Length: 159
Ligand code: HEC
Image: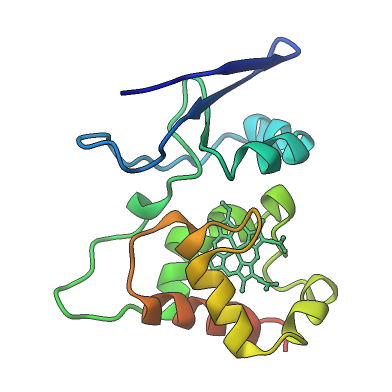
């Protein structure tokens, strides 16, 4: 069941908001790595995307959906806890590589300094449970420890 709302800004951007993200049975989990011109368009509309994000999944018509990111990750071997770089590349980089919707950019010390001051425990909690436009676990269904590994990996880049 898909409740879609299309918003058009100019001729290019068409955003579909899917209510009740990620829970619909049989709904394919999708990953979107957009071409540069689409990514640039998303970045120009970061505030819009950020406002929609708490209520649904933002997708670009004609492309796979960006926000539901868990398929970017190869399936875990049973019982295996994946390393931080693997989780980062497969999940977190979707927003943190480019600084999408206000996400602090990977490796950008200036953007991370105030966040580091919160302490690692708070960063873990925010990454696991979500924080403003940051979705819980980056939208992926992964163990808490893998999220912590990814936080450690991102923090190590800005220490
Ligand atoms: C859909 C985009 C998106 C994805 C995917 C995403 N993040 Fe974020 N993240 C954000 C945004 C936006 C913020 C800034 C939230 C704010 O400060 O209001 C953020 C902030 C954070 C913070 C700082 C929290 C704080 O208290 O300052 C951490 C840590 C973090 N993300 C970790 C992760 C990890 C780990 C992953 C992957 C498992 C991940 N993020 C995936 C969007 C994302």
